[in-house]
Structure formats: structure tokens, C-alpha cells
Image (tube, rainbow, N blue to C red):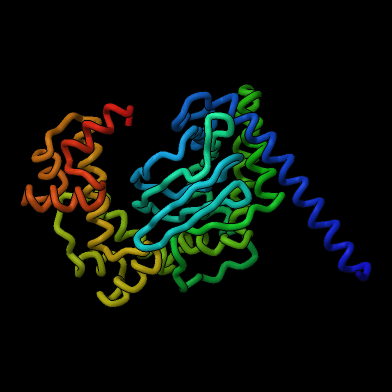
Length: 313
């Protein structure tokens, strides 16, 4: 074995050891600050921690633009027909709001799933993107969610942000500085193009984001493809093509998932009955709502919500 190969092997071993040490420290921090299963907000704006002691059934939610890693465990995500799996060696980014289902696939009481998620601020991303050497608009559209292999630099920035939870007085000054470094690492990393696409003025991803914003704000309105195409400044065919490229769904499929998830929230959190929730999100037919709800969540609305309440969902 020549010297160059030996050097690469030693470097790889050193990187792996550094990543393992970082993960162990991050796991300890999350464990201290998130002691019960579920999400836990933190004193750092936009940062949430997660714990899961079991491999529970999939949960459905709308995931906003976010950077997420885990210090322990593994997870499976489904967006449209796409299935993504990642573990503590990887990170996830989402550049747009996406309805998805997620499931913890590796966790136990002794070694729980421990997660870290930082909301990505589009304005901060846009400011940093404008400062990068390459300012040319990106016209291609990649999927709005992706999994990448963690680097020492990315995980180190995340770890230093988490350390501030043990030094609350430092958060107002240091958290913005460390967050800026983390965003820079993400923007210049292998998945950075997806984030840059979402904030560069005139990019197809930003145009599609305008259509997504309208769908999210007008759940009770029928999907009008011509109106969405006008908002995105695209033809109908371009809208369909780029919308599916970004979200793995058509506009109609995207809106349907948003409607069903909002109806579920209305029943669970605001104690609305199924008929009221269905009407609030734009369904005119109760039978159609019940049919599509069961297809999405596996059970009729009433029994699904009752089960969620029993299990503290």
C-alpha cells in the first residue's frame, strides 16, 4: 500500500473519530435539555430538540424550511412517492414547506432517538447567498428536501450552537454568529444549491414558492392552476413540471395533504367535529373528506383523533 493511500486512510479515520466525538457530546446536550419524548423548544430562536424512545407509527406534518441532524437513532421520511432514510451520519435540509410523513426507525429507552432541528430563515439565507462569489441565478429545480453526509464543519457549528444551551447568557451575542457560520457551511456544502435556489430572485424554485405560499394561505379555495401559474409567472405546463420537481407532488396533491393535515389539527387541537373541520379546509362533501382522510391517515377521522388523544398526540 503506497503512502498516498495510507495518508487518505489515516485522514478518513481521523474525520470519523472527530465526528463520533462531536455526536457523543451533542447527544449528551440533547439528553439533558430534552428529557421526555417529543419536541422541546429551546432558548435559542428557531432551535428545537427531539427525543423518541420507541419506533412509533408514522406521523404526518408540514415541515418548514429546516436543517436537521440527529445524535442518535435513525428516521424515515416520505414526501410524495419519495422515501428518504437517514441516521446520525447524515443531515437533512428542506428548502420549502413540505407535507410529509416521518417515522423513527431506530430508538429504544436506553438509546433514544435524539434530534436537533434549526429553522432556516430565508432572509438570512438570501443575505449570505448574495455575499457568495457565485451570484448567477440558478434556473434548475432540485427536490426541496435532501439528505447529505455530515461534515466535521457542519456538525461542529451545530454542536457549538447546542453548547450555548448550557450558557444561556451567551445566547444573545453568540447564537447569531454561530448560526451564520452554520448557514454558510450549508450554503457552500453539497446540498447548498437547493437552499440557494429557494432565495435567489427569479429562480424557478422561488417562483414555485409563491404558488406554495398561496396554497398554504388559501386552503378553503379550489386549486386554480391558471392563477397559480400567473403567481409563479409560468405556463401551466412549466408550473406542473417545476412544482413536482420541487415537492414530489402536483399542486392538487400538495393542497390535499395540507387540507387533511389542517383538518386533523382542527379536530385535535380546536376540538372541531369532522364536518366543521372538513368545511373549514374547503371540502364540500363529507364522504369525500372521510374517504381521503382514511386513505391519508389509515383511519376514519373520529377514531383517528380519539386514538391520538389517548396516546397524547
